Image (cartoon, rainbow, N blue to C red; front, side, top):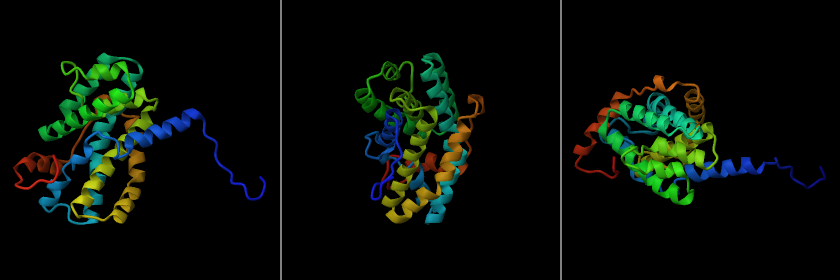
Amino acid sequence: MPYGQTEYNSFSPKQADQELIMMQLADSFFPSGTFTFSHGLEGMVQKGYVQSPEHLLEMLTLTLQQKLGPCELVALIHAHQASSAENIALLKIVEQVLWTHILVEEARETLRRSGQALLRVAATVWPDQQLQQLSDPESFYGLHPIVFAVVGRATGLDAHNTGLAYVHAYITGIVGAAIRLGIIGHIRAQQIRWQLTPCLQEICNDACQTDLESLWSFYPRLDITQMNYCYQEQRLFAN
């Protein structure tokens, strides 16, 4: 290579498209309304469970390993597979399984509201028949992981990359909430996000190999905190 020239890795148009779509879907700039949710963090802060960056990292790790990964992410992967196969009946089953495993009403409502917000935007940006079908309240709840899976398929993302985009957006949303709650600053937030990278990769790989029947979730402290959140006198976030 001649002196002074820089060597760049070549990207196929398809690969570049996938990476750009991943960044678009995972960006907090994307108007899915998730910035209004703390996913239980505000309640954990008010209860005194999360008071430091170390507490936050522990909460996020447990959320990934015991809630998001084995539950929402598994459902997302199977929803993506059903969507790719154009199997709407199976897509309904996947959403119903996810619905029955989310026992906390507040958590269900969060996934429903954020999913429907995502659906309204995505159906306009990426016209797709399945996205129109998801808009039918008689057939679908419109849960966020299910909608996200169909959006990923509609935009050409494979199941694994769709999962990575989902968990990145989820975690950055909570970390952003932690900044607004004064738990951490922007630099520490970036450090925590980087520390979680191996965990994000691990749960995505595991979800791709997990049967729908093996879906599970177990984080009692967070569940109970979310259940009691509506009784808090002061609230910055919607959940």
